[in-house]
Figure (cartoon, rainbow, N blue to C red):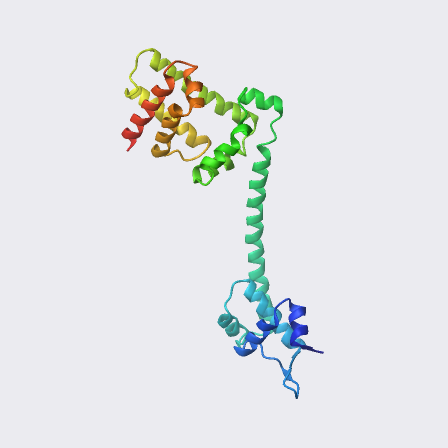
Length: 252
């Protein structure tokens, strides 16, 4: 049995141009040429092409493939064994990557699994979904936002309740410090600002001092954040901002 260049190209799923190139570089030359000069490939040629394509799939360049296939010390069966081992290793890597993707997909799904009752219990009247588009528009390209999305997607009700309790406890300590007249630059208040920064890093993303400083500014500049804190105690948003800025200076 023999194949024309078009037949072999269709059988192997490559272009005729590819077969012409392989012939030109001496990687796969047809065993037969007709009197009219047309290429005819044998079954052995087709088998060699298969081995070439496997090595190409594994990322080998043509020169290296030629050296491997033309090595007189290695027979065809041994070459097939080598390809099998390489492919099995690649399959293992691909399976690992697939599992990673599946984990990320599952994490994204989990974020929507809170029931309406659980959403209300965790977030109260605040609905995170109402602010997703704005947050993505403002910070979607940042590594911090992307990390936050990945990590938040893995949390269930119990973890969100812990996050909420920790955040409220930090806010209460800020309000208490302000009520007793502690300056926002006092060491104990700076430590509280650091607890706030670490809380964000622990649950959402690596909150550097520079990022934390930006959050502090936003707590005052954004009326929604300012209202959230100032409803707790008038002036609390500005107080937290000053503590965050001073702690950022302390942390360098």
